[in-house]
Each structure stands twice: as C-alpha cells, then as structure tokens.
Amino acid sequence: MIVMFAVFLLSLLVITALAIVQTRNLFVAVMLTSIFSLLMAANFFILDAADVALTEAAVGAGVTTVIFLAALALTGERERPRRAGIIGPLVVVVSTTLVLLYATFDKPRLGDPLAPVHTHVAPWYLEKTPELIEIPNVVTAILGSFRAYDTLGEVFVVFAACIGVLFVLGAGSKAPAAIDGSERDSLGLRHHLIPQVVGRLLIPFIVLFGLYVQFHGEYGPGGGFQAGAIIATGVILYALIEGEKAALRAIPRGALLGLVAGGAMLYGLVGLAGILMGGNFLDYSVLMEDPVKGQQYGIILIEAGVGMAVCGSLLTIFHAFAAREGS
Amino acid sequence: MSDYWALALDVLSVVLLTSGGAFVLIGGIGALRLPNLYTRMHAASLTDSMATLLIFAGIMLQAGLSLATIKLCAIMLFLLLTGPTASYALANAALLSGLEPETIGEEDDAE
Image 1 (tube, each protein chain N blue to C red):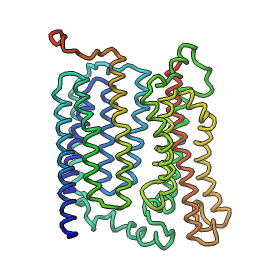
Image 2 (image 1 turned 90 degrees about the horizontal axis):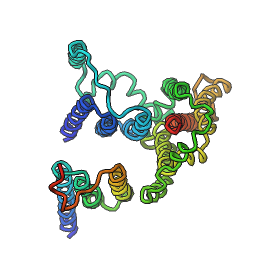
Image 3 (image 1 turned 180 degrees about the vertical axis):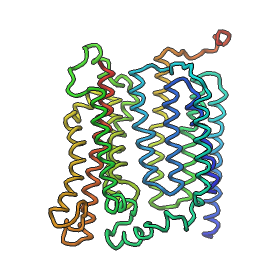
Image 4 (image 1 turned 90 degrees about the vertical axis):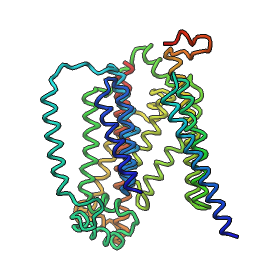
C-alpha cells in the first residue's frame, strides 16, 4: 500500500518537474515548484522522515514561494525565448541520467535492514540516545548533539546566505521609497476584508504552532529549522495582509538582523561554554552537574539559536525583496 | 452489542469517506472541464468545503475519542477557514485584474 502511494507521488513529482521545464510563464513555474515541494514533503513523510517533511513543507512550499513571487515582481513574468541548440543540453542530460541510473544498481533495496546506512552508526545512535540524552526523538539527538558540528555548519550557511542576499539587494539602511510607491505597498491587502479578518485570526495560532514545534522538538518531529520557518510564514502573512511597513514596525530590521547574528552566535557560544567548563567544543555533558541534563539543556539552547537564525534570515530576505519592490 | 456499534461506525465512516472522495472527484473534473475561471473555481471550491468536512468526519470516526480526533478537528477548522478565503482571494484578484464574469446573455460573445 505504502509502495503504491510512493510510486503515485513520485510519478506526480516527475510530471510536475516536466511541467516546470515546459512552461514559459514564470508565475506558473513558481506555483509548480510549490506543488513540487509539497509532493516531496508527502514523499518524505511516507518514508517516515517527519522532521524533513515538516521543513520541506514550511520552507519549500511556503516561504520559498513567497520569496520567488517577490522576485518575480522585480522581473518579468515570461521567460525570455532562447535560440540555443538542443543537442548539447540533451547529451548532458541523457548521459547524467544514465550514470545516475547505473549508480542506483549498487544502491541497497529501499528499507533493507542490512543496508550500510543501517549497520554503521545508526544502531549506536538508537541504542545510546535513551541512555546519554534521554529524549524520545532520536533525530533531534543526532542533529543537536551527536552531529552538532554539521548543524552548526548549516546555521552558518543560513547566516551567510542572509548576508549574501542583503549584499546583492543592497537593502541595508534604505531611504523610504517615493511617496506614491510607499503608499501603494504599505496598503497590503487592507482593503480586502475577508483575507484580513481570517489572517488576523490565524496568525497567533501559526506563531503558537511554531513555538510548539520549537520546544517540542525533543519529543516529536520538529526543532529549530521547522519552527523558524513556521514563525517566519506567520510574520510574512502579517506583512502580506497589513502591508510590509506594518510588519517592519512590529519587528524592525535591526531586530531581525539581531536574530540572525544572535542565533548563530548563541549556537557558537554554547559550544564555547562547553570548552570553558572543561569539555570539548559542543559537548553539552559538562554544562550541568548531571551529564544527561546538560545534554538536554544544550540541545534546547542550540535549537533556540537555530530557530532564531532561520526565522531572522527568512524574514530579512523577504523584506529585502519587498523593499526593492517598493522603490 | 459493541460489535454492532463498531460496525455501524465503520460503515458510517466509509460512507462519509466515499462521498467525500466523490466530491473531490467531481471538483477535479469540474476544474478541468468547465469553461472559464469562475466556474472552474466554483467546482474546485467543492473540494475546499464539502469534501473537507466529509473526509475529516470519516477519519474522525475511525480515530475514535482520542488526541488524534482533536488534532483532526484543528486541521479541519484550519482548512475550512483558509480554503474559502483562498478561493475568495483568487476570485477577487481575477476580478480586479479585469476578468469579467460571463453572464447568460453574452454567451455568444465569448471566445
């Protein structure tokens, strides 16, 4: 039954991908990428990767779509027709596909318990998590503690991406846009009563759900990445219905940059605190008397850092695009 | 006695799920076959409201009195709030961008 679902979703995925390549209308392409992400999230969920599914649904289908739309508002809606030859790209695509297909022959069967990935370190993680960290969600334990270096790297990638977008779009301390422009974009959807009322009703619950995902990450699917993205969608919804200026009044740009830098720094400082208290970098066991409690506190702290950095970056990038649009 | 009760609940939930699925199907066919944006949205909004209600009622009967039912209830409320709002926003955007709904007298002019 699950296999049938998976095959169905994967074929939809291929159809969507072909449609994205086919369409010349970029607006349609953006909507199709959103559908692609949602299908991918469903696929991840079928494979029991609930944490990844949550991230994919929130970031891929939610925030990225809004940012793409903001970027589209700066460019044209139609793809420029190209007169390039078809032979070269076709050769590259076909040969890559053949190589990838050849590589899948060496892949173990899906869900094979004897696959290398299930026999190498995974059993150790599964066995030691209840003993060393005592939290039910092993994914969070691996991300936050066992492989904390990798997650630190990811947070700094998010940080660097945010700084890069700000450099490219040049949205540092920008003078307010021309009067007519600023009036137009500060209106948002204010004259549309129904979306506004429903949005106002939903935003508190979206943010609350984000906080739940943030602090429930040790017990169920969730954690900083997902929570940051969900809270960011809540604030972006606010910006869409009340106007971008209102959202910037609620959370000013300085506070957002503070969240980005502070989140990344909080993660690093927790690592340094480990060194200062006599352990290794990012070894949380020394943070408290009881090593298990120390691990739990460390994970909560770094997850908070991750959430702050992700939420701040997504909102900063959104505002950077929206500010360009207003000018 | 409890066996009959469980069977009745099962039958009821299957009926609800099937009719919900039928609404999704009708909505899908309508969205593909109807002539213009507004009529297509009218078909698609079937899946938004009626199918959501029926399918979630069906799943809730399967879940019984548990935490899952409360979560399902929350998701249903969310969908019932956002679906029609999205339909409204879409129709409104179409109207504002200048797509006039066809009225009966003008059928000959269309296309």
